[in-house]
Image (cartoon, rainbow, N blue to C red; front, side, top):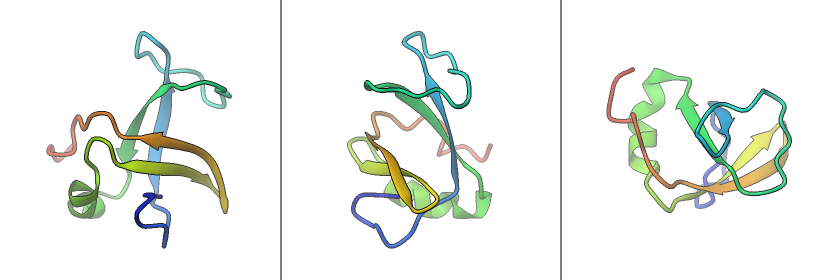
Length: 83
């Protein structure tokens, strides 16, 4: 969920990364800041996310109806690609 648009949550896959940018095991609990990789699951919504996702945009990770983490976009890697 984007901080500026809390009207809905999006289905975006995420994976947490360690300091070497390798994937952490699924279910890892992080108490400090970590980097994460996000992937838009619905290709038809990429156009919307291209307009919303930019460095410094704040967002929340939502599980069910609970905000479980907050973050800030630091870089956009592959959103311009179709894959």
